[in-house]
Structures are given as C-alpha cells and as structure tokens.
Amino acid sequence: MNTSSNSYTFLFSIAMVVVVGALLSFVAVSTKTRINKNVRLEKMQNILSTVGINVDRDAAEAEYNKVIKEELSLKNDGSVNESVDAFEIDLAKEVKKDESDQIYPLYIAENNGQKYYIIPLRGAGLWDAIWGYISLAEDLNTVKGAVFDHKGETPGLGGEITTTWFQEQFKDEKIFNANSQLVGVASVKGNNDPSGSKKDDNQVDAISGATITSDGVTNMIQERLSHYKAYIDKQKSSLAQK
Amino acid sequence: MAAKEKNKTQKKPLVLFVKEEKEPLFSKKNRALMTDPLNDNNPITVQVLGICSALAITVQLKPAIVMSVAVLFVLAMSNVIVSVMRNLIPNRIRIIVQLVVVAALVVIVDLVLKAFLYDVSKQLSVFVGLIITNCIVMGRLEAFALGNGPWKSFLDGIGNAAGYAWILIAVAFFRELLGSGKLFGLQVIPDSFYSLGYVNNGLMLLSPMALITVGVIIWIQRSKNRKLIEKN
Image: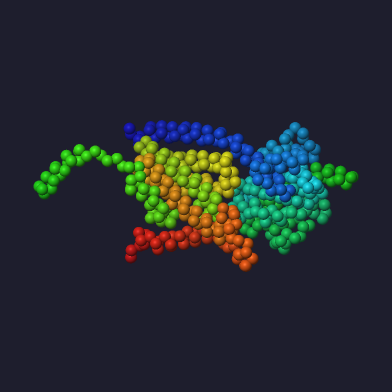
C-alpha cells in the first residue's frame, strides 16, 4: 500500500475526522448531565456566598432552597415577568439583547432574620467575559457581599478578582452616592483607602496591574444595577410607607 | 580472508536452527524505557521539555498530581495509538495526525474532569488544554512511537510521564510547604512556629520560584548522576 499517495492521504484524513468526531461527541453527550449539574451547583454556591454562606457543592442545593425565598424575573420597568424561571436565565445571552427585551433575574434571600437582594452581574474584562453576584441589604443600598469570576483574565493580575481580599472590600459599600444617585461601586486606583475603611465613597481599591479588568468590574456593576433602578425605587417607597 | 569466510558459512546454519527468541515483556531493554526518563533522561531536568506546566501548576500538590495523572494518561494512550497506526499514517500529514490524537484525548480528559472533579478542573482551567502543546507529548510521539511497537511505546509513555510527574510533585511539595505551610491543603506547620515568628514565604507561590526549585533539583541531580556530568 502506498501510504504517501494523495488519494490515500485524503482518505486517511477523512476517516480520521469521522472516527475522532464520533468518539468526542459520544463522550461529550455522556458527560453532559453531570457537567451541567456541577455548573448549576456552582451557581448556587456563588449566590450563597454573597450572603456569607459557604457550603460544599453537595450541600449547596439544600441550603439554597432553604435560604433563597424568591427568584424574580424583572422587566426593565421593575415589574415581574412571571413566565420565566429566574434561575434558568442565561445572562450571557441576555446582555446581548436590547435593554427593553432583557429579563433581569433577582434572588431574594433570608438568612438569620436578614433580608438580602442578590443581583447577578455580567460584563467584559480585558480578555473575555467576567461575571459575578452582588448582594444588597434590605435598604437596597448597602452591599453585603460580592463574588466575581472570569473566563480568561490573566492569572495573578485580572484573575485576582476571584480572590477574597478583592471581594471582601465590597462589603458595606454603598451603591447610591450622597445625592441619591445610583453609581454602583467603582474599583479605582489611588483612592487613598487601600484597607477599604471608607464605606460611603462608592469606591474600592483596584487591582494593581489590572486596570482594564478593574474598570470592567466598575462598569459591570454600574451597568447591571442601573437596570434594577425601577425595582429598587419601588421597593424603597413601599419600605418608606411602612 | 578465507578463514573468515569459512567461519561465516559455518555459523550461518546454526542461526537457522536457533528459534528466534521472543523478548520478554519486561526485558532489561523494556525496563530501561521506563526507568531512564526518571533520572538519566528526565524530560524536565535533562531534556527541558514541559517546563511551562511545571511552573504553572505546582503551587499546590493536588493539582500537580492531577496534572501528572492527566499527562500520564494522554502520553501513554497517544503513544500506543500512534504506534499502532505508525505504518498507516501518511508521512506528509503525520504531525497533524499526532495532534488530532493528542487533542482528542485531551478533550476527553477535560470533559471527564469537569464531570467528576469539577473543582480540580476549575483550578487546572487552561492548563488541561495546554497538555496538547506539552512538548513531552509531541516529542515522544515523533521520536519514539512512530518507530516502535505499541508495548514499547506504552512503556516509554509511562516512563516519560512518570519522570515528568515526580519532578512536578517534588516541586509542588516544596512550594506548598514553604509557600503556604500546607500539604494537600492541610496545615502541617504547627501554629507554635507562627507564634515564634515563622512566616510563610509568599515568594514560593510565584512562578519564578518554581523555576528556581527545578534548577535546584537539576543541580542536585547533576552532582549525583555521573552520566550527566559534562567532561571538559
């Protein structure tokens, strides 16, 4: 057999592609349910960690069902869209839509008598998508916790957004400024507050060497929160009436 | 001259009657395929292949071990597969064929990790994909599997992966111990040390110290192993 003829080379590569393709799709299909389950449980873990609950992956589902009281799918005007399961909303797809067509998921949790509003985030870092969750206290102003994750930020620089020291800073920061404008929490350099002790300046310390990722976090928080403004205003006025 | 020829003709019939000896599975030569890469021909410290992953995932022991197992699987399997097909592979596209074999195996490893060891796969993240470009894998396919039978190639794959693994695990041991005072995530340096003023060396967690640790291992190895000492 002449293994260096053109026709043999073609036939060989075609056969190889078919065999390898079939094998890979078989493995992908057979591991799919397990992988999806892991991703789902990780999402629950992330949501829980914004309200200060850190659980094992196996315990996540039970704890999630216990703590999360409501899952809301909001429209841009703050009204609730009952027909959509908030947990199943894929933010990666939503953020590409028009503002008015998007559905904004919101999770309401109760832990130790405290009420938390948890808002999922998604934006762009330096190389690829970044995402996370931020939880607000009952006043819908004070941040109670935040987690971030990323797809491809540089390890050691932008990748630091997943570390505790960065996420801890957001605790007790305010999302409204002194003039009651919704500004979010900005990650800035040189705010003379590296320990994060000033909690009313709407700022945390950015990551050195990762300006664009830090700006990405800033923009993500501001952009995402702005869509919840209508809902927040509504809740606030009902709180005030009480 | 004539005597020699006579000798030859006398010897020839002898060979015909001797039954060709079958090589035992673990003959001395075959064992050498496995043991050589551990020391004399170590892929990392002697051939200096696969350094990038040795730097990147040796901060803790657990990912280092998982990475070693993943490389062991990919290297042994791809060596065998390529060796089985070595007479069928068209010479002109052999590198592409090798890449496809390695890439397919890596994708399988990645999916299995995601399904069964999700945390580890998050930690290894991009490095699992980078097994494809691990020079050890392509190097062994090109240098060994294309010219040897499946069993020898399998042993060669195991040997080289083991040589890679022990360096990785040794480096990870020192980096985790000195960098965070832990082994396998469990604290091993007692609290009393810390209260006496002992501090974890944060530098050990950074990649440059992995290179230096590998350097120290090479230094020790070269001072012990006579074969590696250059004569001049």
